[in-house]
Length: 107
Picture (cartoon, helix red, strand yellow):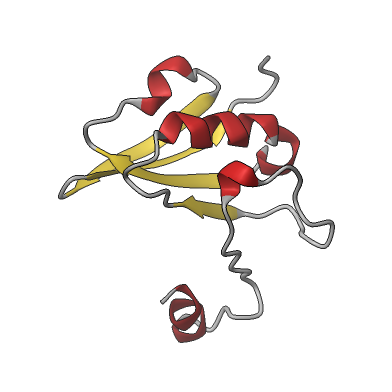
């Protein structure tokens, strides 16, 4: 579906779709350029805080990327992560979609 959407938008040459287990990822492939936009859609059974921890660990790669993160409405993963700057938050059914960035110079 993502690939079809890239093609429909005429952007297949600008996007890369990686199908991988982000939580098991220890490093990012060297051929990857820093992304402008990244969409994270972990299964609802996964605690989204684990995804946020991994993003923070790879902060140099994601520093200037727009992060779009989908999580279930019964989770509040950003409470313990003030390093994320929310630009927009939307609710669709049982999903919450976060649009934002990593704050600069956080520890």
